[in-house]
Length: 260
Image (cartoon, rainbow, N blue to C red; front, side, top):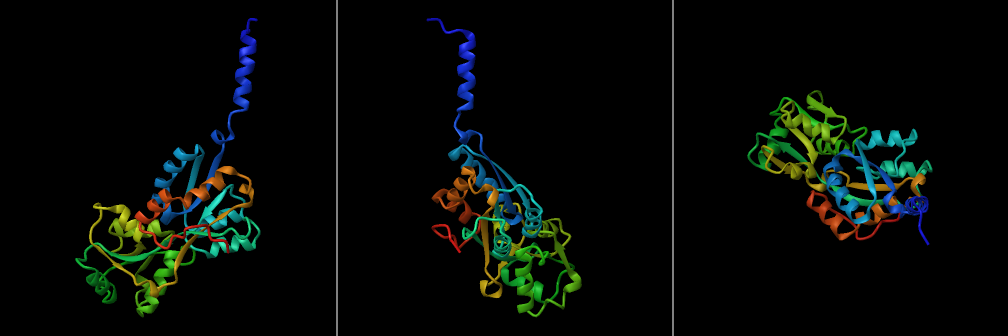
């Protein structure tokens, strides 16, 4: 029996329609700006392993929270704190009781002109700078942590007029990098990412001086049945992903998803 071209074409189209869904699924992730470089390393690894495609949007946690409450089509929200994921839970916009901690952030004081961590701290305490850069404490967890540190040092009011606020921690970093600020509270991960392309030193802020920066994630309700979203959350707790996250300067990773 001869197989006609028409039959072959029909079989080909049928094959396309039955192609595994894994090749078609896409994932939209809202990511806190401090985690951007780490996420850019995680995405290729996940895509290669899973076959799913990931699109990430980076901004401050506060800005992403606002976008989600206004209907932005994200599947997963990776915040730089636990407050905003919790608020989304209260609003009924995410899958309940599935909030998880994927990283714990560390705050450092970056001083491009200092030669030691002690000198960096002294430069701050003595006011030997024109401008101090922090992230906006109203919308960025790292900015809120920076204000707590300044309060503990008794400097929160003293230098208020010499403090410049970035919309997020990435912009706070840029203020120092560009020389527009002589000191800045930034994420340890940013310092590590910069490698040799950065001047000065950092003072590692003692963790007792600020509230833990538990970076938490949530699965939005629209993605409850999205296999790509579920696979990505599982991937975050794989050994490979945890190594990438830890190497980027984050600590406190849990072995399994934390249900709260």
